[in-house]
Image 1 (cartoon, rainbow, N blue to C red):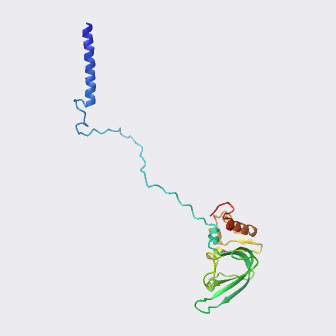
Image 2: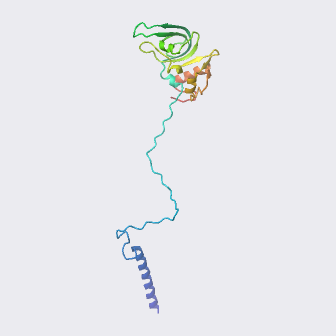
Image 3: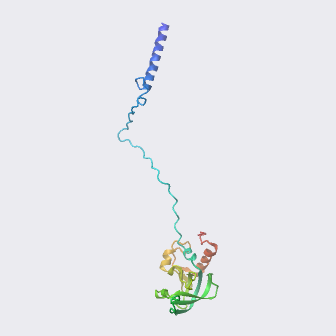
Length: 221
């Protein structure tokens, strides 16, 4: 009896291995559908199943450029002459020849020399007469802070970027900004959109910006 039971168990074990082998080979003794060159049946997803959408890689992003600073450096960099002073005389001269067009000469008494001039000197500049005709005028006794272009070949100069390079000084000694200056320099760490700035604050801050390259916030150009 013992030998028959042992034989029966061996037979069942062999049968089980045979069934497992046939399942792995595809049920018919072959290597399955892939071995026969047939396409495997697609896996079906249950209705309503959602799968996460993988992001499609795009071109690498470049770092955005910082906005161009709109501060007093806009006037300082191109200026060859910077000073504060008051007008002591104005003269108009007609054109004497084609190379010498009509000009307006304005003489200033320099109060604070910042660039290109000496303190307390009398500085005479020549402007194209058309500027006066367009309304860019001075009056005797007027006090200003000027940022002027370096004189050209004919000796003419003008405020940097027109009205932006000319700051008025009122009777109380305060620097007064016009509408264009207020709008342009709104982001300046010193001006901060102010319409009136004490002269004793404006000129020292301007000197620091020119000679140290830093504004009151310690920012370099």
